[in-house]
Amino acid sequence: MSRPVLIAGLGLLTLLLAGLSLMAGRVWVPFDAWAEMTDPRWAIIFELRVPRTLLGVLVGAALGASGAALQGYTRNPLADPGVLGVSSMAALGGVISLYFGLVTDSPWVLPTLAIGGAGAGVLLLLLLAGSTSGIVTFVLAGVVLQTVATAGTALALNLAPTPWAVNEIVNWLMGSLADRSVEEVRLAAPFILVGLALLMTTARGLDALTLGETGAASLGVDLKALRLVLVAAVALMVGASVAVTGVIGFVGLLVPHLVRPLVGGRPGALLLPSALAGATLVLAADIVVRLTPSAAEVKLGVAMAALGGPFFLLLLARLRRRIA
Amino acid sequence: MALVAEGLGVTLGGRVVLSELSARLEPGAVTCIVGPNGAGKSTLMACLAGLRRPDAGRALLDETPILAMPARARALRLGFLPQTPEVAWAVEARTLVGLGRIPHGRGDAGSEAGRGAVARAMAATGVADLARRTVDTLSGGERGRVLIARALAGEPEWLLADEPLTGLDIGHQIDACELFGRLAREAGKGVVLTLHDLAMALRVADRVLVLAEGRVIADGPATEALSPAVIRQAYGVETRLGAGAFGPTLELVGRHGG
Image (tube, rainbow over all chains, first blue to last red; front, side):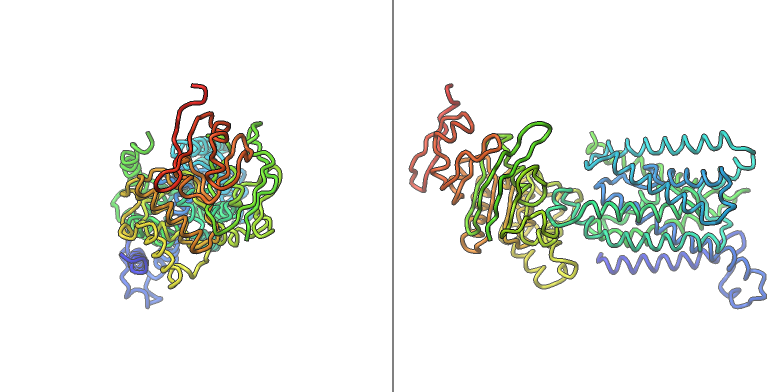
């Protein structure tokens, strides 16, 4: 399949799912309800479904592209912001702002701290793993990061002043797109779009890294600049995503694997298709979550983990020979 | 046009790897760098390719310090083939060779010039028929030739190849050496190779630099630089140079004093 066809196909799929996402839910809203402002369902569409759908597209694209870029940079097929603790570091930033009640000062505090946490996370990850592409070192670095972030979050829960604070933090940590408003879209969209644009500039550098760091350097790639742009882009995208939806894992792991065979393995060619495929995956999962008949809505983060866990296991089994 | 090492010195973890090494390499010739393990061959190559900052001295291309050149301009002029080339993803051979065109900029991939250079490089190393195979399905020798094509595809003025013959069978070793010879003598490029096989160096090199403990201990035409006395000093091995029917030969006698 040629790359333009793939991109067009994924773009179309994203649009279709976005349309479905506007209609689907506890209340089915067909398109003919759109024109009538007097229709009571009009509010459902514009105040609930539109923000939820936009966030699904943005967050899915951010997570999918981040996973593809991290895998390309580290030449490691198990890299993913969720699995390697980057999302947890962003969440820790968010938890800190919730814990100290900084959120009431300005709506930008939480995203800023989450982006800071994600940035520290990616930077630590790349520093801990060093210049090797060894899978073991990399996963261990991720475990360290995940542990630190989880411990910090646990401490905040432990010391939380009231049960309501605990409830607020726990609820936010389990990623979800439910009950989001235009406000959240406004908070996350600029960061995610800037991050995505930054990430697209790394495509050729990521391609060159197919030949390892020495190979890439000999092709004139400035590795320090590449790393800096990558860290900034992933921090912006993952931090902003986590800030408005909480932790949704495995998107960045699943998506590049599904897309890679279709683009012929070149990491730079993987970025845009992974963003689109990430958007379709998150939209599809969110629609399923909404339509699931349960008393309380299943959180999207939980559903993705249920899907991603077995996939991770499958991947590990396939890679076992390479790791040993 | 000359590639010059000017008093290069590199110390790694307290060990002197290169010491006041100076050499002037001219294009239009194949220069082989030989020497025992740890003599500093790869470090010298990395310095000449602008990939390592020496602790002392500098490397120059046309009187310009290589490290002062913009990375892309440097990459356009100096092609480098690392000793153990990593290939991280299972890309098609033609995609891998195409990576060599990265210094030529964004518009190159779809252009006539870019496609032509990739096709010529693959034809030159005899891997045109492997174009659509993914690299994980290639044998070691096929992979080695695809990687040489990758280095050629950028059409640099200088080709610096660190152990390019590793993994190739003798037939393909000879093909590769003849290709390096043509690049130097017909296309006028500068070719610098590090080799372990002294007989192959004798066959391909216009000039040989023998390194030992970070210094050049012999420099000259192959038959002079690879004299028994030099090889004894560098490797501790007794050899005999002979005159074969198809050129000079190098016979291994045994370990020195053994």
